Image (tube, rainbow, N blue to C red; front, side, top):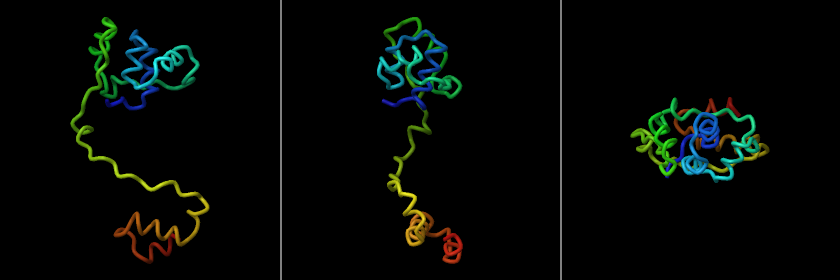
Length: 128
């Protein structure tokens, strides 16, 4: 199941601005129901700014009104052809410690791997 962008901030907004049940919010945001209750009590996500799912085209106002009236319904994320058709993201390399990043051979190797055609040898020499 697809989750909304920034699930905790979305849950904060839904708790503050709607009367949807904690169970509905937890299912929509992919959070545990006790975590949603903690957000409502002020124990979790203290000071977090809410993220409006209506303005960001993740939910419609009609969907929220329907779910407020019937607690057995679940919120449904608006599907987007652009997001659904994105290719899978290429896995990045692992974290490189700062001490290794500052060594010239590793820096040159990193530049050659990341920008094989964009940089010339003289540009790499200037950068390192």
